[in-house]
Amino acid sequence: MKHYVRAYWVGFLAAASVIAGATRAEACGGFFCSQVQPVNQAAERIIFADNGDGTQTAVIEIMYQGPSQHFSWVLPISSVPMGSQIKVASDIAFQRLQAATNPQYTLTTSVEGTCKPEPTPQYTGAGGSSSGVLEASTGGTGGGAAGGGVTVEASGVVGSFDWTVISLDTSVTDPASAAVKWLGDNGFDVPAGAPDLLGPYLADGLYLLALKLTKGSDTGSIRPIVLTYAGTQASIPIKLTAVSANDNMGVMTWLLGDSRAVPQNYLSLELNEARIDWFNASLNYNDVVTAAADDAGGQGFVTELAGPTDPLANVVWGPSDDATWNAVKSRTYSSFDDVLQTTQEVYGSYDGYWDAVQAVVTLPDGVTFADFKQCTSCYSGQIQVPPAQLMDQLQTLVIDPIRDVQTLVSSHPHVTRLYTTMSADEMTLDPLFTFNPDLPDESNVHTATRVIECNPDIYQSDAPWRIELPQGGVVRGTPSTTGSWPTALSNQPPNRVITRQSDSGDGKTIEDNTDAINAALDAYNASLPPTPASSAGGSGGNGGTTGAGTGGVATSGGNSSAGTSGTGAAGGVSGSSGSAATAGSTSNGGASGSTPAGQSEPSGHESGGGCALAQSGPEEPWAALFGLVLFGFWRRRKG
Image (cartoon, rainbow, N blue to C red; front, side):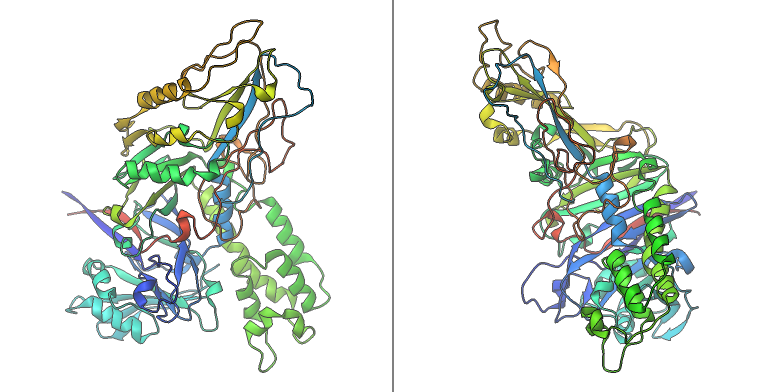
């Protein structure tokens, strides 16, 4: 018979509560760090890729606030990584991928009928905002007994991380305590409760991968990690996160494979788009997602995008990036000062840049690298390094980590982006994901139309309007309410449809609120003042969800431009290489805007409608993300 063995990777990356002056290790939540300088893991995004050969690749981003002289990242894993199975990635890759796949809510405007000419030309509508949301590994050494029942299976350096994989002898009576002792003895900061957390995974015979910063590196060197491991199914550890999770913690993941991915043991949520503020979706998108997740008992994901990866071909790294890098490499430099100034202008904000510089410079006696980094011009003429040496390090530590993520995305035909928010009391089940080839694609582009209902007796600025939602249904408004989404609609169900999905079929409908939503829209529309009648003929009145309105010929309104920079791409994905969001911004969300009737935004204009992201900052739901990042998989073995 066949057995299915479930195993996990757990990364001790628990989100810290933002507590001023906290000194206890527990404040770090499980992110092993200095007790006197606790860190706050501010955000995390994960890419899972099913490689189709019995392995998974996970790209894990960690962002945190606050310094730490010592921290450790410990993950129980199923296999020992060798060579390129462990390497670093770049935050730039996450920024660009998120910007290109963010949900976009676009409100176009058209005019129905003919209004009385305005005494002074004017346009209604407001433009949307355009804010951003939105290395090669050294070869590992072989294993060897480390004493105390611990065996070092492999070790090496990747980026600015020292990494070690250990295993525990089966004869050890308390393997978790033995592992924690070894970690502490070898410079890894571990909290007091670590044995209880590690014990179940060591009992399953898993290895421990431990990472720490190399000597001389600061916390600015912490960057995403890429791991390839044996397994075929992804999972995120939520139960272990609850101890330190903030309310409404954001969880975002991309799943790469042959078809659309779905949550297998969580619910799939289709948002009620009448709850979205179509005038400015960045104001309430996360609130709607949170309400939808709460409506599902805290265990549901919104599918923000599902489609082919072709439109993402040059999003993370493209020809323009190659051209820039080739120009930097091939330029003739007059001095190392010239090299440093040029490369810093182009790549100074990228992960790995200062690690590359530190790898090649020899500083004057008594000068620390921190001193040099703070004022490079202070040491002008005192350092001479052949440009080729720095270029080699930039290739390894800066360029290749971005290219690797692009290669990973492009090597899989389909991408799915899932998003939710969760609070501690909802984290009772670890979400598991699978692929379902029977489900259709899901666009991240949502477009509604605002129709201004004109008649010859009123100015266009005084005309009522209706917004026709893409899901069906109509929201009516008056000139005085233009730009303000009706607060009464916040009482509607946040989910239009909730389903339970699996690896085949259309799924099982758990809840369908379509009729209730339409009835609520009808009731709201009926509560508004009647549409002004025209002396030339009766108006259509306040219609229901079918949107009856004033007669006349509609004229095409202007389409809002995408909020992320770069041209739009097929499949509902926008953005191109270089369209990175603001560094460090990881909030999810969608924004929108309307365009004046009959006008189109200029090509490439970013302040038109349809911006794709929420505001960033410490108060966003992403402000304190994952604890124990866990990647689960199912391994099939014959009994």
